[in-house]
Amino acid sequence: MIPPKLTPKQKALAINLDPNIYGTFAEIGAGQETVRHFFRAGGASQTIAKAMSAYDKDFSDAIYGKEVKNRYVTQNRLRKMLRYEVSLIEERLSRENAPGRKFFSYANTVTTINFDKTMKGHGWVGLRFQLDENEDYNEIVFHVKFNENDATLQQETLGGLGVNLIYGAFNYSDNPRRLLDSLYDDISTDNVEIDMVDFSGPAFTYVDNRLMSLQLVKNGMTDAVIFNSQGNNMLPADILYKRDIFAVRGSFRPVTLVNIDMFEKGLNMFMNEFGCSLEGTVVLFEITISNLRAAGDIDERDFLDRVDILAKLGYTVIISNFSEYYRLIDYFANYTGGKLGVAMGVNNLLDVFDENYYKNLSGGILEAFGKFFRKDMTVYLYPYKDPETHELLTSNNLKVSGNLKELYKYFKLNQRIIDIVDYNPDYSEIYSREILSKIANHESGWENQVPEEVAPMIRERGMFGYKEELKLKEFS
Image 1 (tube, helix red, strand yellow):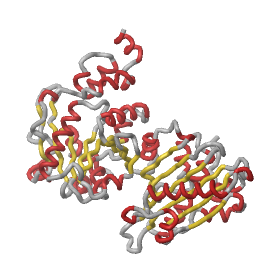
Image 2: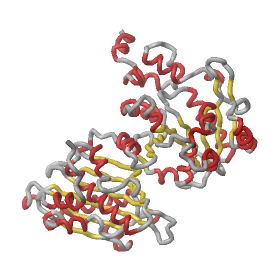
Image 3: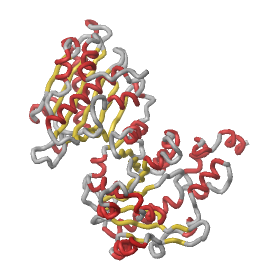
Image 4: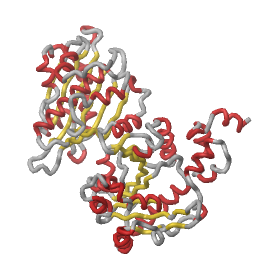
């Protein structure tokens, strides 16, 4: 039987009544929304060492130091706050006088919705805490985007998130998934989005933050998450803001030479056409949740296998819940007005022109096309060789529904769909499903159809059904 969820007041009271939990609250930008729950719950005197709101920038700088470019709503600022406040507790209080105490510092730095409602508001929330007085500190840090259209409501939401974080850290640290879910106790996912999270410290040595990112998308806490080739979770705004973006979608199970050829040739065309620079262009390999669920529920080991291979090749990965392409482009457009490019195969473009995908839109396929084929967005189309007829399909012989032919001609005529013509014809009969079947059945021939770094990884780690007993047989 699942126990009932506690209210914010009940959680705050439970923390207050624990004589060994003791710490500080530092909140910047939206009032002291979290700490007031603890004051109101009662018994706060043995929990709260200090509560402050260093709202004025000059005073905040005097405490925590100045920030580069005067940016205060940043992860760097939050971590400075957390570590500074913990150091003060350690410096000013003797553990001999309070054996068994577990110190913590809670902090947030946020900006709520502006007066003109042109900027919804966002911020960083975090906790630095001990689970044992003799252990090092743990940290949980996450970024929030507010969706409510009223500053007071956003403040209420922020306060609830803070209470949930503190209670979850001291009660669910052995179960990070439950901890993550509990952040939304008494809060709707429609009210606030968490688009980046990071767990660190001795309590979370076994936690893979990429899996925590996957949970954010899987549980509807955000639409997309990004992590780099080192496996570090990245804030989408930091990566995408005012940048040119080039994306390749795929299941990447595994990455094939076709994927790499499509990416490299498409990217070269994109950069040459628009004069983009490598420094100003973000390149993303996108995997949708719908691809991960292709065989039922998400296999997390399989997910990490795909991501590890992409990381080995040096690529940045975006995990999204965008089954339709137009939603991906719409997401990018929220961060940038720069050039957008997408490389895809002919079969994927056929899906784009399938009206059945857009039945949930009041404007149907025309609404979707308005978001997908927006200004400065170009599709780079990789040819597809039909395995049965051996016909090579390009934009010139692609067959779309009769009522969409003229629309298709319009986009092609206006260079919104461009063929990748310098593709490698030797790759035209490489099919990922056949490779996957060969790997699982231990058949030869697949090794030369994937990048050279990939085959050893698949063998050594037993990826994609490559069985251990067959590995032993191969090397005996």
